[in-house]
Length: 101
Ligand SMILES: C[C@H](O)[C@H](O)[C@H]1CNC2=NC(N)=NC(=O)C2=N1
Image 1 (cartoon, rainbow, N blue to C red):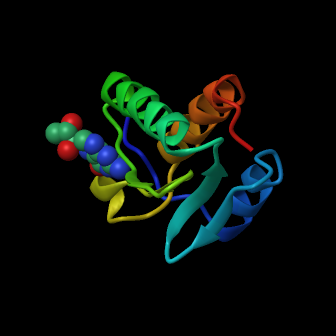
Image 2 (cartoon, protein in one colour; image 1 turned 120 degrees about the vertical axis):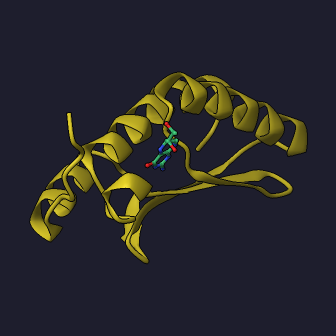
């Protein structure tokens, strides 16, 4: 199934279901705050496993106690697609278990 770029309205509609996520620089983004560096590192490892499973990868940035994701779909010309939102939803499903806010 080809991954089609989503329209601005489709992106906005989907973002309403994903509190904390934003659309910037042609990517959907989210920054999580964790209880310290080890917790942030553990979330990064878990997200990396999800990304390998989905074969879809964000730019993933580890800070002292933060994890930032920024993602779009390269094969769709670096546009935001449904696959990016599928990854976002999977990450949202695991983040609370890490104590992420
Ligand atoms: C060959 C491999 O399946 C592709 O390069 C995958 C890997 N991860 C990817 N991640 C993202 N964000 N976009 C892609 O188009 C993409 N394609």
